[in-house]
Image 1 (cartoon, rainbow, N blue to C red):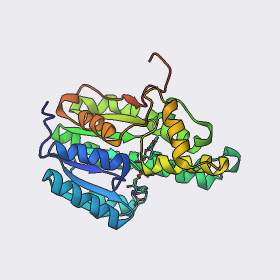
Image 2: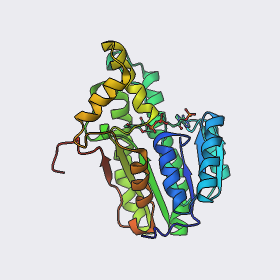
Image 3: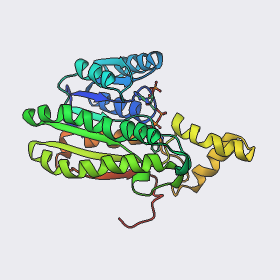
Length: 259
Ligand code: NAP
């Protein structure tokens, strides 16, 4: 299938590794030019070079913190008129809500809700005028099935999801869609870091904990980042203009509901 987005321009936030990198690679495979972001310059540039040489598209690396005003301004300067925006940032730490201060909440809300809203605010009108836009918010399976120790993530991402549910029904009239992709367990550095506390507490090797968790998934494994990237590229395609305001769970069937 031709996704019909060759030559389009995309901003993919938080994309030197993991799910952001996978979305970038899948878009590049469709001929989309990219602006990538991450805080650490070395790995970001490596990813940009790798994707550019593999797929022959233009890839610009902008090192900076996407959760800051300066970070966002630098990205928008490099790509003022994106056709595609993939919102992503690091996830907040787990913990007990009794320990979280207002400052902890503000950091989580800023990273996992307000940053995406701010980037949408600054790009959506241009997309509407040009009659094409695809916005993807990488959130979490925790939006649908909250996990108690990830309360900061549950709260902030649910806020973003609620906001988008409203505006995505307006933008679609201009061929601008906004959808959420909800990752379950995908094999990335972030996943490995969330397994560490369980390994330390039990005194067992992290590989053993990982194998046990993977076996508990109905698919019998963790998700592969490229599977996530493929879903992102399809939702960003010109074929997906009738899908908006949706939250698509990629969890190997973990969520047990019919819908
Ligand atoms: P990852 O493998 O740790 O990659 C995170 C990427 O984001 C890196 O490129 C990192 O680079 C960049 N980044 C982090 N904070 C940033 C910031 N403030 N500004 C710019 N770039 C930033 O994580 P992942 O597994 O891909 O997860 C992506 C998102 O999905 C996270 O919000 C995570 O909580 C969520 N999620 C993941 C899973 C999973 O199983 N993997 C499940 C549910 C939800 P730098 O560190 O250099 O900035």
